[in-house]
Image (tube, rainbow, N blue to C red):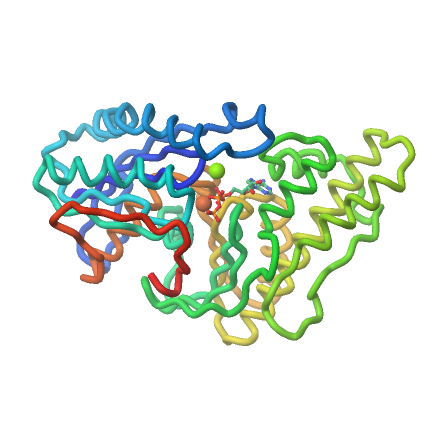
Length: 343
Ligand code: ATP
Ligand code: MG
Ligand code: FE
């Protein structure tokens, strides 16, 4: 069975073709193509929703043609069309949903709405070292920070989440304060390589809260305060502040993940979402998990941020289990706010 996946929830247009066999086999990625709108939004310091929607319209059909060509497939080879139904920007989601459902109607094939975070969560199954259920998932993206117990596809128990900003947002907002542009996460991480992580004493909110929740808003305020204290911010100060900020965010993510593993007794951790690309996070998690005989799995670096492959994969894994919410009448809606445990 061939599943075409379309992602358009935010500022990346992604399309992919995945082949799914029986449930015991991990679906195979045949081809995927991506267009990032980062250059377009950079001038505004963040995503402009209206511009995002318009650009998805321009990109989605050419990307679909490219994916089919790369896979050596025809439109008639598609058995199911999957699309990101939410959460995300309403206008952006509507583009992918509209195209996917029109394509499904034209081909006479069913469509499947996919939860964007389920896509992130399952993306490590496309890596060279795929996980096995059950596991603890650390979902760290631009809009979400959650710890979850995952027993199978669609079996999610929320263990803890951020009470304010997401981890990616903490990276992005701190980077913005330092004048590092958008999206700030990767830029801050690059600068941090040249800095001393102990130079600034930044807070670790909720580190000892006794639960698995996160808070990052205070960190951003502390970064602002430190910047104001420095009369002239030299390049070394900036690098030191970047390293100290990254260390605070990473330490919070690692400590809470370890606490979640302890609480659930599970020996497997899956990291997903854009912040999962962070090298310092991977380094600290790998070291701490090795000490505890815990196995850690990550998505391929190219599949950490938004992409179509994870959407086609999530649909495929649900179809394999007979639990995909398939629609054959091709009417559709989008769900800009949609908690994962309700999916
Ligand atoms: P959501 O999935 O919650 O809707 P999103 O789709 O915008 O949000 P992702 O695409 O998963 O989020 O990830 C983007 C985030 O990842 C941004 O906040 C970005 O700064 C961050 N990010 C990407 N690479 C790195 C890195 N190397 N270090 C730190 N943060 C990073
Ligand atoms: Mg993005
Ligand atoms: Fe995302």
